Image 1 (cartoon, rainbow, N blue to C red):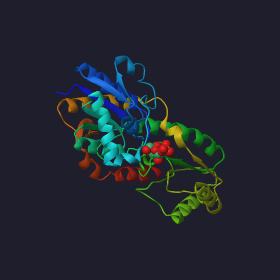
Image 2: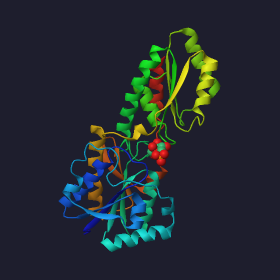
Image 3: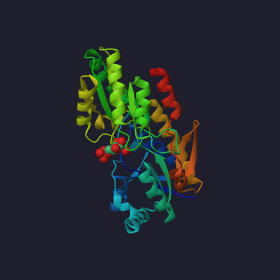
Image 4: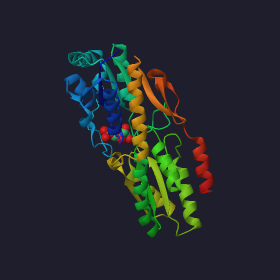
Length: 322
Ligand code: F6P
């Protein structure tokens, strides 16, 4: 049976990562394992930034956003010789298996390390909710709530001025943050990579809205990267629809803050399950929440799964806005 495991966080940080670290450390110790924290993601692995953890290392972090192990993006980890350096570091410490918390880019590194002899389990830590093998990623719920807090505040001033507010949210290439917050906020329009709307149609819809009611205000939620020049887009809306228009890019405020209860619990369940998998001698898997059950998938299978485009949610939004 294995005796020493490591844990690292990789890619963009997300609220709840600390809860996952805590669960892995505490479950590992409970089963008699030695647990090592690897700082700065795969970069820290390659550089040997590795520290033994105990129960106290993860005290008082349940309510802290970010990741106490810090994180990084290391593109070079795709190269086998770079990964080999990481494996040499693990061998130095006698670490036999690893839990990797991050997005799909981090999963690929975990799978490759498994193929090189170090069993790895991936946990979905990202605000984007862009991993098809889980209903929710760790951090999505907190981020969604942060977006709703911000939009609630923007709504007050939008309404007072009968304006149109265009609000850009994160998500990388996934529209879930925009779609879910759009439903939660009763946004007039939601534009995502899965459900794009041609600019002409956006103008027409907003113009009609404004013509029907001159006191109308409009909240338009857009996924990042869809309008690289958001200022120019907002100016066009202002010119062509009759709405006095403003735009806001919520930015990194979305990634910070205390994790929600949902994310804390999700992370705890997934972290403990990852340790169980390693104790069973499994590797190359990623953990998901499907129908409220914690499950595991082969990482290659998980990465090939089609993402849910939430068509029924879009239909609901249409009914509620109609
Ligand atoms: O993947 C998380 C995420 O916040 C994305 O939503 C966003 O596109 C990206 O990371 C931003 O990355 P960075 O913090 O490196 O600018």
